[in-house]
Image (cartoon, rainbow, N blue to C red; front, top):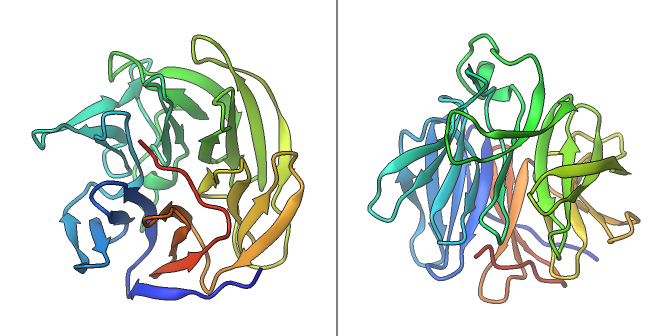
Length: 280
């Protein structure tokens, strides 16, 4: 399939975290180095949503429609309450500050899962400071922000994550190792039986980063050249060749066939045959 790209905005430092609001009909996205969360809509174009934003990266909505954000500058996952208060929901593990929560996904049972590489402790993408934890993990938010549940700790750079359509499996990619792993999700939300699922190969710039499923269960994952599309059996269907190095993407629009792409200095939109899915 050939794709046409519409540049909705450019001149940013590094775009990430696109998230479509299904009833408000707007897109949020982050510019981490600029410490600026922006809003785009067909009516208003691009405007400021939150600045400063603690260098937010991945964004999600929980099942009540509340905004969940991974903050690089604070090493926290936060939730914006209906009254506008921003509260931390994950900050530490065993008394040590998280590395820098990067991407986040919400399950229909209320579980919130996030990846925790150290990118936000480096200059440009975050605030340079020593890492307190000796590993990079994937977590589930618990009842106490200071004691989230560690699920897996053997990643190099865990990044994008998404559930299968029936939510019985969780896909997690590793930017450094350039592959996608899949885990079975147990009754308590724990992850087991981790195994290699697919690799993103190519000689163009790019590596695994944002990752999501479409309505047919195909897995879309950033990689060399743009966005790699795998069928449910891990067969590579195509690579969407994006004009700039791609960090993340999200479906939106009335029919969920508009794919919004955060790619380095710009925000793009293109159209896909298969729609995405509403996030809540």
